[in-house]
Amino acid sequence: MPLDHIHQMQLLKDLLEDHYSDAAGTVAEYEQIERTVKSLLADDSIDESFKAVLMDVYEYGQKGKNTNRPESHIQNHRERLAEWIGLLGQISE
Image (cartoon, rainbow, N blue to C red; front, side, top):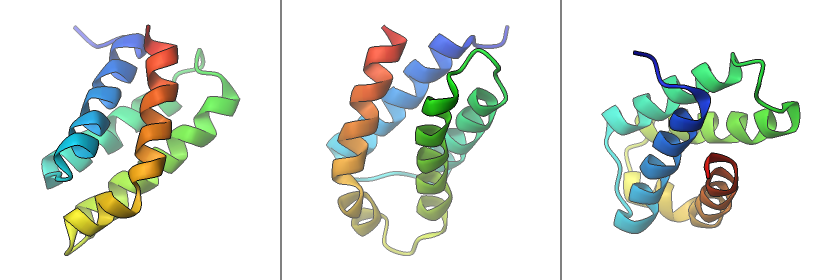
């Protein structure tokens, strides 16, 4: 059974919260972020203004899976992570 967009946003929020709190992320987590964002971007029920935020999250996932310094990558995005987590929390509740 595929996840609806509310559940996908909750999954994305959970992944980003883990990165924020643990200051660590795996390649598999970054790939999951990318897959989830791609699915949300293809969903016509997602507001266009929020899709710009999703593109930023997608870029975060792409750069994260290819970095040699994952802790630095997360530290460099801490403020953005907090912002994204807050936005996803508002939408997915």
